[in-house]
Image (cartoon, rainbow, N blue to C red):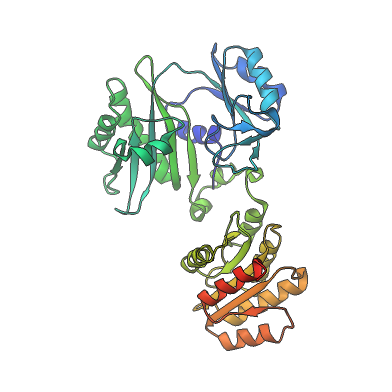
Length: 398
């Protein structure tokens, strides 16, 4: 689960991280009051959407010469005018895709006298099986370019879970970021603070870009992006309350109600598969044969007929879907349950696009019998390769 920048900063502030004063608003009429709560005279008006690259983003409605989604201003009047211009409009960034995201919230924050911009994040490093810090002296909006073109400027420091962050770990981070006092000592303390927040709140990503060194030599969290492990949210009702469903795909919201692992993509072949690995392989082979998947959807190993029906409805609700591939390898999951769910869903919502079904494993003969006797216009496939070729050909009109 993702949260907004202002929410992430509030969480980090509870743990003692240094963040600037700021006020979140949802109405331009609140802008003046918000600004007057801050020291000034410099203010930052920040779009709050679940996507990066806001500073370089462009508003669809404002033309190519308009400012981006993060604006530095020097008066309360400018805070108000920019808030009126930004709220309600659609911000397009590298991470939103061409459709962009409507800006429904702004964060009015106190300005900062920036001497240096650094990059710092926490994530799970699967190569060593530990939580690790990723740090770079090249912070700011072009960190992706730094990682691609000068990877030697990216430093990874894994943390021993038995000890947590030690002074030695903090000093390594400070050295990687080339910090002097007082920032060096503050970095050691901040590293411990961030690791504590990351582990206690079951985060999957904590990214600070940039972490800044101020003109006075102190450090501050200038931006924060935080994601949480969905599987651990039952332990954090306070975090669940931060969820903003307006930032999520409606199909993904519906999928979460049925405990389905669903991610919307930009292709045109809907996929329903059991098992994350098989789902990834299914998407890969669709790409291999020249098409693109419209979603990742793992119905899980123990799905019921009702769950399968819900999954099929979600796929067919996507207007971009021009064909559907059901790929089931029955281990714990039974092929007849999948077949019953597919038949029930098609009878309820109809079938307007080609459907290819590949079943293998537990109760496969019964599953095929249910499909064959349903009267549905379904193309059967012998294996995954055959299924992929058939759905791609059907979508392309071959």
